[in-house]
Image (cartoon, rainbow, N blue to C red):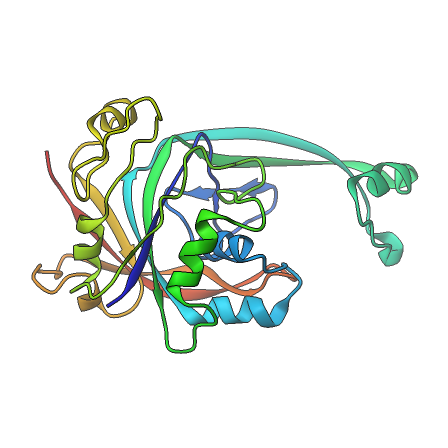
Length: 260
């Protein structure tokens, strides 16, 4: 199989889970909606372009290798926004504060982030994919829109380092073949295949254990490993409509691989 791999690292990330009331939780690994949102931004697809967004939603499968889940960071968040009476559309933040001045109210929320988390994402194109993996790789190197790790307050802190790996036996083989680049620019030394450089492993406190998440068939992940201990779970992060913020459940598999 052909897979496009790229890494996600930043000082903060927020991988949204189901939002209940004022609580905005974050998972400890990237969601499919966040991954496809980042890819869509790199390609220059507008959030309001339902046709192109639908092509992303149904054209690709994702897998994630987690090196570090980072530290949990909670933020007590306050914001002033006008109410929605009259269904008036505020197109900018200035419109909210100036035109909606008489209707301003304060909303409270508790938001979660992951600090210093590192993961590698694998993208697999399905037959109905709108863009080839080569096209996506090119745009990940030179994105059209700014890229974020779940929220606009969470920019990337290192290049994505995308790599297109063709004719891989399975997803695990691709993850092990991925060539890591140093996160810090002062040491221009590549890591071992499938491993970050020693300097990055030290300050991120990553050991040999890995967490893997993927969708598709269980054997797509690894053909030579006993996957009887895998978990199959449901996650509500399959985008339905970016415009209406609607998401559907999808099935994904989880496998833990220990190490020194």
